[in-house]
Each structure stands twice: as structure tokens, then as C-alpha cells.
Length: 92
Image (cartoon, rainbow, N blue to C red; front, side, top):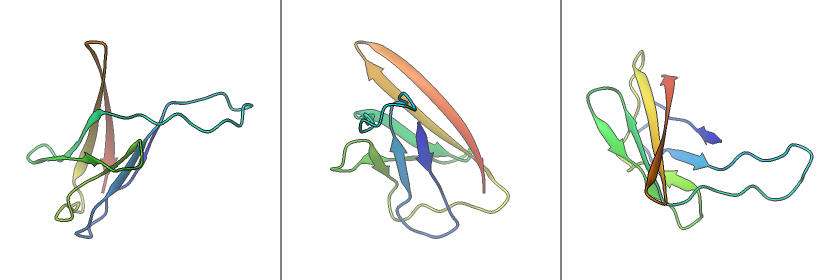
């Protein structure tokens, strides 16, 4: 699962990555760690860094969204030599 947002404010924007789980099991969600995460508007790509809390990723504090721009969130999870890309589009 991907949870996050980007605003027009110049700040660190947070993205949370976790594995989906069974709705009826209330165990804590397993978070996605060691992923390569970036946000791009098609011209500039901003890499996110993982926080000390597993599965939480942040942009640099200089990143902001531009109104009317389509922003792409890209993450790649590397497991045993395979890369599983995921792309999500966000309209700011």
C-alpha cells in the first residue's frame, strides 16, 4: 500500500509503504523497507530517503508540487535480484 501526499508547500513530504494484509486479521502491517522511492513531474525527479521508522520515506525539505502538474510517484522494491516497480499518478 502507498500512502502519501505532495503539496505546494516547500517541506519534507511523507510517503508510507506497506504490504497489504488480510482485512479480518488485526496484526500490525508489515512495512516495506529498502525501496528506491522517487517523485517526478516528468522533468525533475526527487529521490526520497527512508526514515529511521521502517517504511516511511521523505523528500528533501526543498521539494514542492506545482498546481496543475501531474506528479508520478515511483517505487521499486528490490528482492532477491528482482525489481518490482510501482507507478502512481497524483494531480496537484
